[in-house]
Length: 186
Image 1 (cartoon, rainbow, N blue to C red):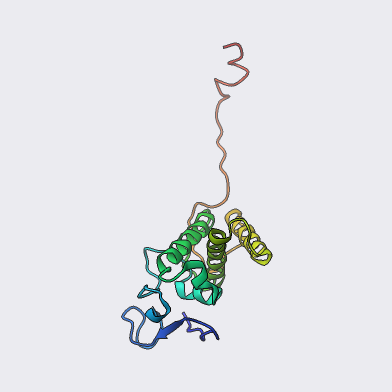
Image 2 (cartoon, rainbow, N blue to C red):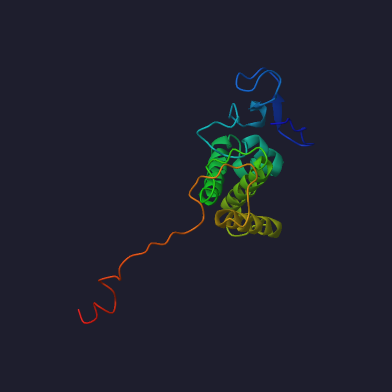
């Protein structure tokens, strides 16, 4: 993946030390600063989490609200929210695609969906049913896109299809022996 420039406000920093998985100087390893009260040592996406976004991405999305929503040391809760949002994406995308979706072309879209659903969880936990109207609209758009992805109305570019397809099958055979009409009176 390409390296994105840092946002104006971010309690995060990129570590340019060599990463054995991605080579030297890729900036793929992200460490949280303990001075910010966050104890996670790494937000690099791991195979077992399957989130499409990292805690670093969530920190940039939420900005100064991150600490208010997750508190200090909230990396575990943030990762749980990211994983739950990714599971929701996989549940819809899994109707048509192999999950987790590993498409470079769809990565930005999946990251945005993951962050939007995660933000809904984070803000909902703190605010109950009171969510900002813009967030409600974004969540509705994401869920509509997920529905369209599941039904095949929307295609994720570059994603590997799982072979199950969206069609249906029919079979030919004899008339059913047991039906409502033949069992009337029993």
